[in-house]
Amino acid sequence: MNAKITQGWERIGFRLYRDNVYLLSPSSQYLEDQRGVLRRRLAELGVSWRSAP
Image (cartoon, rainbow, N blue to C red; front, side):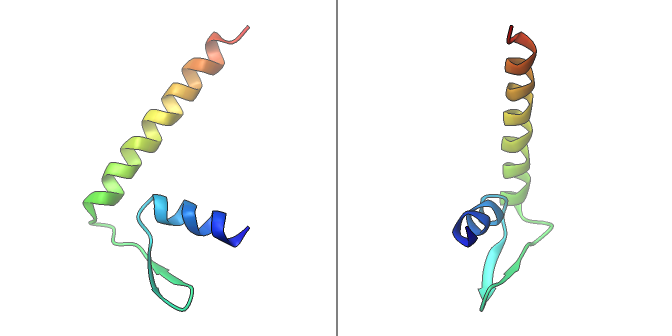
């Protein structure tokens, strides 16, 4: 369970600092890129949901 949570945080840009402490740089380009990916995935999910019978 913790591994999945860790993967989720790392997917959006959090990085391990030390001992289970994760940091996120708000000015990170990676964070901005991942936000765009998540927005596109959400939009695709919405389209597929609307087109479902």
